[in-house]
Length: 157
Image 1 (cartoon, rainbow, N blue to C red):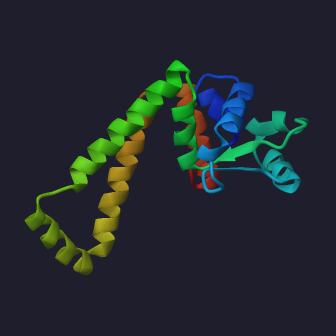
Image 2: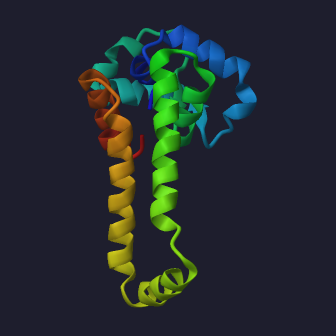
């Protein structure tokens, strides 16, 4: 997700997001965030109409993976970022509760995985999709649209 879009999701200015990322650089390793190259920026602007404003930007934009987007929520102090951060924690706790079963059912689940791994993968995908829905419930329609656009464009939030 491009930094400008992420800033919109968290209801802050892109400049403020960039400041916090620079101040907390140790929290954003390469697999959480990176800068686009000049070629990548040009290609993205050409393919995505909603990013046309990046065309004349002097600096190359930060790009966040799903991990970086969640980490950004933890370093930002806007009400929306705090709300998203709390919601993400609640979603992961709910997912952990759903996955952590008593020992006997876990053993039987692993024996079934060998026989039905495709079904198990579909079930896990469904649980993760539901967790994402929980997070998106707390966003307004514009922010949900941005998340969907970024997810469908890149395959990652």
